Image (cartoon, rainbow, N blue to C red):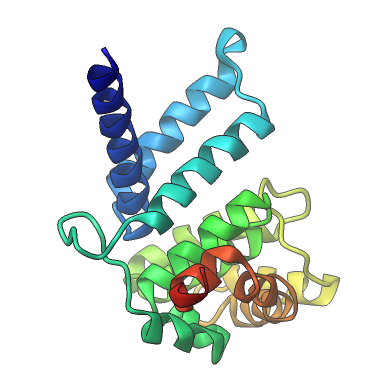
Length: 212
């Protein structure tokens, strides 16, 4: 009986670990499915999940993810400590790493403060868009993050908000339409959440495993 229970527990932990690693290394399908499930849970009164419950689930997945060893290359893209240590050199160095930026976002999700990063990443994707798709994407980003009372509104001054609106209303596709707003969001992250991330267990355990 004990063997059966342990086997079941190990399998469950492995599934959670794989799910979280897939999210970290950019498996968009896994992330989309998770978002759909979460939305359904939130919209169904009989299966509501409190923020504290969501936090416990995220913490569990994060902990399992960090404890997983490099030996199983099928599931993990965990970087070497030397690579992770470079993330402390600058915000740009962290964002240049797919793994690092995903781990940073996981850290922000635990604090329910991921708006600035989500905006920053959305703008980066927007810059890579084809010109014929820029207008629609720009409007969507503005509606989601920049407009007053937007669902994920970022903290921007009135002048930056107005300049951004003027930019996206232009008939000319402009990959730099959000530059001022993006710089503002990056500045806030560099002064606050980025520094806290570098002091967090998520980063330190990865960059300096010999200390943990």
